[in-house]
Amino acid sequence: MERILYKDALDLPVQNLKNVALSKKSFTLSWEDPERLNSKISHYEVSLRFEPTIRWLTYKVYDYQKDYKYDWEGNDELKFGSLIVHWKVQIVGLDAPGFVTNLSVVAFGSRQVRLYWNSTDDVGSGIIAYNIERGKKNSLNKWQILKSQVVTDNWVDVKDLTPNQEYEFRVIHESTTSLGVPSNIASAKTLTDSSTAPPQNVRGFATCAESIEVFWEEPELDHENGNITGYKVYFTRKIGRKPLFLTAGGNARSIYIQGLSKFTQYSVWVVAFNEKGDSPPSPIFELYTKEKVPEGAPQSVQAQALNDTFIAVTWLPPLLSLQNGRIFGYKIYYRKHKDATEFGEEYYIKLYGDSLRDAVLHESISADQDYRLNVAAFAVLGKRMIFLC
Image 1 (cartoon, rainbow, N blue to C red):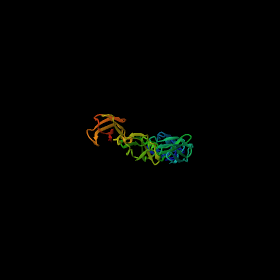
Image 2: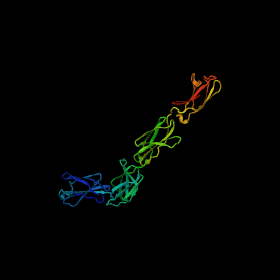
Image 3: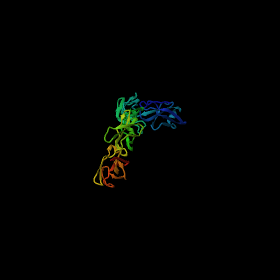
Image 4: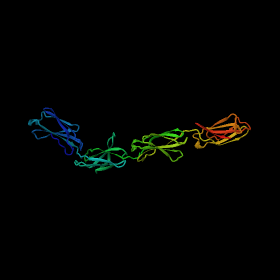
């Protein structure tokens, strides 16, 4: 048995070349491709020689075949010698330009890598360029040809990559007529960068008059650029004060914010961060804390008798910071008193409207009688009063 290498096609001959006798006059040859090719295969040439002749009979076998059956019944060659047969298999390549060796890749920053390689010693018809192919590890669409990266040197910088992404590369020689086979695969992971997209779907609601809960989702995966270390949740009053923020861990998706002002509008946004810095901020959303019983009483309450049975009452609303919600209206309570002692039935009138500032009392008002009055502001959750002698 002989095994030979076609000059510009391979770096190894075919492997596992075997013969199996089928009968006294026929046998089958089978083989496998070498582990490494430096060209695409055109076809195989199977050559046979029968002793004592010195002439080889050559047959073409194309790439989709990996075996060849020979039946010599009726062939003239058997008339001149024994049944001792020699055979060999050659692989014929397509103008092989060789292949790259020792491909390596080094990451330079978060968006760039550099590739290095050695050329084959057997360049076939001559290498005129190197074609670079790139793929993301475990990606379904494996290889992307970087047509702008056809180079003649034995190194190249590949830019505009995604941070914190593992890439695979291979290099293919190109001759004047064809491409060689791909090199070995080399991989590298770009370095981490800050996230280039904000947290998504930021939202929240008021849990009580002094706290809110904020929720969010992580940035888009392709823009995280590394492991998210944590999140900063910013909040500030609508009036534009300098924002405060709380920090949550990288796996957190919500946070409670407490100690807020009652029934106050807050602006909230979220930022993701890692060791390289902060992401862009999420869009701002606004919400109110819940309402609560007013803490402040109506101010500047005054009363004046208009005649024997009518009393005019005026007031100002509670301080805005102490209202703790929307003022729905006012109640005016009044009762007879004498010598600092109240007596008789207590009466009141209920007035709706946050803009009210005065009222007139006339029901059950008696002539020549002192009255003690108090005014209460009421909201959804309760009321607050102030007394007037």
